[in-house]
Structure formats: structure tokens, C-alpha cells
Length: 336
Image (cartoon, rainbow, N blue to C red; front, side, top):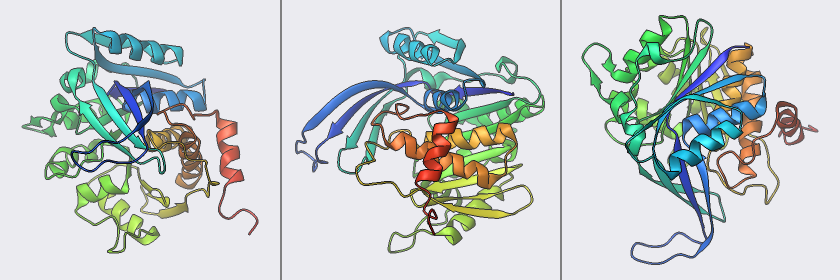
């Protein structure tokens, strides 16, 4: 079993569940509050470890010498991740206030970058070897790695290129930001990625292709257009785009596959924090297992569905067999 190194964001989420979203200057009732870990390293790393405890999952990140840093490292260790490569520095641990609407699970994030903005390792600091996988995220929140590099475009692109030169496979994750800087930060990294998993909003921000039509709809053809455009920037192997309606993937041979999302019962969704990370964990597991993209998307959509049953970023994560059972149970083609 290959080692998977999750590098980048470790943060602490202060989750507040809202009765309604307020107009500017108005008040909204907070129905509940909790604290949990968040960010790429925590969410996707814990989800993958929960899927299969036999996978060697390593956290590589920086956190502050503060209570949030203690909390984050403790949660990672409790969930079986190797935290020996998490450094403590004199900066506040990255944190996010997550406002989640109770009725839909829709959430909005207010992030304080903190220690994560200073994270900028060299390739020889990554504890991986030939055949292992490095998953780096979230780009657009890693200020030091997002910064320009005269040869590679960004420091993240340089890191990925140097890591690949050691025979380590690479994957990236990003945040859903819609701004003019997105293409300049993301495009340099893509030729140095074996795998890319992102949502439709992120793919649209990179490519300039609208994710949805004028009526807000998206279908397999639009996902194919987005996936092929992202893959065209140089992704080495598999490019996967997901959205609430389904997911689509292009492989190294140029084949496209589409899979609709599971049909979940009323009341199933308790929150959407970390649903994309859960989807990503399923795809990463399929990559290290050598599965085809359709099999991977089956696992990924079920992992996302499990996540939706919890208000926290990782509280709904299940083992492999239980996750695959969800895929069978809520498959939209079941009984047809």
C-alpha cells in the first residue's frame, strides 16, 4: 500500500449553524456551535484514513504554538495520521468561521490565514518516496506556495515538479475562489499533477467556461467540457470534476465518463462542510488502488453522501464497506 502525504492547510473550524442568512446589518439566530478541524490535510486525510486504516497517511503542515494548534494536532493523531511532520511556529493556527444554513447545509467561510500562509516546503522535506502520492492543498490559501516563481510560475508548481522528479505521484486541491488571480495560480501547477479533483465552480474559475447555463443547470456535457479543458492544461493522468448533480472524469487516454450523484432521502443532509474533501478522499483511494475512474467516482460520491449526514467536516466518514453500501443503497439506477 502506498503512502499518501497530505501537505498544506491544517486549520480549525468554528462552525455556527444559522436559522437564516441575514441581510447586511441584520441579525440571524445561531442554533448551534462547535469546533472541529478543517482544511485539506485534516478533512481529506482523516476521511481517507477512515476509509481504510491500513493506508499510511502522513500530515505535513505548519500550525501555531497555540490552543488551536494543540487541538488540530491532537485530532489528527487520534484519527491515526502520522503527525511527526507537523511543525509548530510562532504564528496563529489558521482558522475559519464556518456559517452553515440549517435548511440546506449551504455554508460560507471567513478565513484567517495564519500559519498556513507561511507554509513553503522544499521537495526534500516531503516524507515520501517513489510510488507514493503527495496531495497538496488548498492552493489559493497557501500564500507562500501561491507566490510567483521565475521558472515554474509559482512556488507550488516548482514543489510539484521537484517531487515528481523523485517518482512521487502528485495531486492538488484548491478552494472555491472566483477572482482574476485563479488561472495564474492554478495553471502553472497542472502540468506537474498526475491527478486533479475539483468542483465545477473551481473548474469554471480556471478555464473561464461557465459551470452552468442561464437557468443554473449543469449536465454531463458541461462537465465533459470543463474536465477536458482542465486536463488540457497538462494534467498527466486523471481529471475529475464534481458538482451536486454528479461527477465527470477524463483519463490519460482522453476517455470521458459521467456518473450521477446518489439520491439521498429527505432529512439526510445535516451539513455540507467537507463534502468536496470527502469526495476527493474517495478518488485518492481509487488512485492508489489503481481503479478505473468510474469505480473511483462510485466510491467518491458515496463518501460525499456519508459526509453530508454530519454537520462537521469529517464526522460522517465511514469505512470502505459501509461507504460502498451507501453507493448501492442510494444508487439512482437501483431497481430500474
